[in-house]
Amino acid sequence: MTTADDTPFLDLRNLHVRYGAADSSPAVRIDQLTLLRGQFLGLAGESGAGKTTAGLTVLGLTRHAGARVTGSIRLAGEELVSAPERRLRQLRGTTMALIPQNPAAAFSPVLPVGTTVLRALRLHGCTRAEARRRATAALERVGLPAEHLTRFPHQLSGGQLQRVAIALASALRTRLLIADEPTSALDVTVQAEICALLAELRDAHGTAVLFISHDLALLAGLCDRIAVLHHGQVIEDRPAAELIAAPRADCTRRLLAAVPRPGTPATPGPRDGRDEEAAGA
Ligand SMILES: Nc1ncnc2c1ncn2[C@@H]1O[C@H](COP(=O)(O)OP(=O)(O)O)[C@@H](O)[C@H]1O
Ligand SMILES: [Mg+2]
Image (tube, rainbow, N blue to C red; front, top):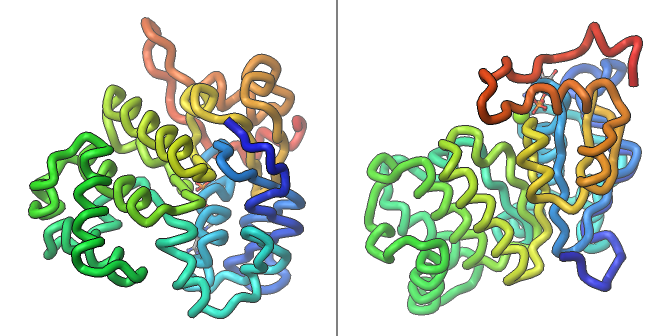
């Protein structure tokens, strides 16, 4: 589903992210990448392509790793590259949020998950009663009984924790979710459930989702569009079905070839294609 509003909700222009010196080669150099409200955009690429760096940079989190960020990131028209940390902190959690690969990273190991959820809701202006009501409703929407709020992270499975993280995003009415390989630590059936929940969240709140994965088959089933990153650059950005049916770049073909098919032995995961790519794409 895409909405009638075709102004980009997220608009990256000339975005360069460097971990090293100003003249080092950038981990990300995106000329342009846009995401509409309610759109599911897949961000694919081999290991080391810059997917996580791109996602964390949108959230304003690569600054903390000492990265230099230049160019423009506009979220609903607001420039984030030059925004003060205080503003980014406000936006993270309400307007935009991360669903990380390892859901345990989103929760304190020493607190019941409900405490983390209620604190986040309180921090963003809910009264105690409202926070409790929203947390319970959101948990039920992702198929977990409310008593799971009293559990500690280690008492929940990876899939359950990922559900709680999605429930929190839903309770906060997050408008942009950056999901960074959110299912790669989960088994296949749970993977499908988590993807379905993200799609429901999009349908319920018009949440835009940037879904990062090296798994093109997974992205194809979920996304409106897929952008492929290679050495930090977008080398293909097309409607998902088109890209899968007729990949243009060598790197995209390699990612497709790495998708395990039923009945065939799993092929090794995608590798960093730094050397072989020179001739292609
Ligand atoms: N915190 C960091 N400090 C320095 N270099 C980093 C850091 N994070 C990532 N990189 C480098 O940036 C490049 C892109 O990495 P990453 O964004 O993690 O790629 P992906 O998520 O596609 O695997 C890689 O060369 C990686 O080594
Ligand atoms: Mg990554």
